[in-house]
Image: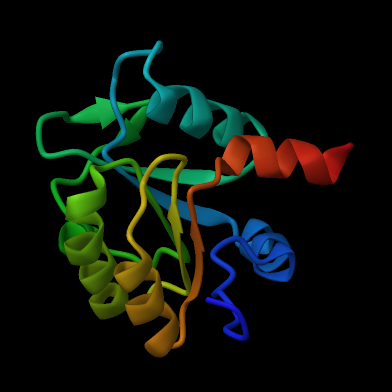
Length: 141
């Protein structure tokens, strides 16, 4: 692929911009405190972010009302943090676009370049295969 520039799916400037937003819907947030989604969301909550759990199988997670889908959230969310399988990321991105989110974040091992390109094409900031907790800690250091 010489001569071709590869897309940057974890642009440092985008990461900084996304971390300035304060309302984060966490799609796939587990009530299990040992699951990565719970660890990351709990950390972000302690750092002052408003966490909005999205999980159709729970009523509350982290003392926050849980919503079955992004569409069911009755207020605006800025960032959609995706803890779903890579093959499900595209539909979550489409939901994020319809919900008017400003950014999507595909967590570590969620690999969906087409979804990231779709988000960016719709004007959203997008990061793929990075951990929000780790990236925030890097910036704090």
